[in-house]
Image (spheres, rainbow, N blue to C red):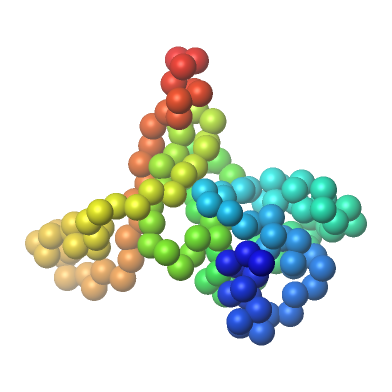
Length: 140
């Protein structure tokens, strides 16, 4: 059983066939699918699943804090990251949009000096690195 499925079961979230398939699709490392990609992969497992079910379920998972909704520069589609409970940052290819989880050695919250906080109480930080993946880099 996937980590996401285990977390959802632990919360008592009702796992319909559609919700289960969506959670299974989101299982794995470096998973950052768009809603359309989740739908296409879910249809391969459960042909009758609707696009609305996928969008609604993704919205619920984000609201529950079980999946992160990740947006990147350049107007690309939102991506959904099931790695919501392990602090991490992202590395994004500016060519094809491939996204990978990366783990900083230092705490990014501590990287903002007190003098640069302007009185804010900092509650979170998002770090996204951009570059070109090996495949896109070889085409440049």
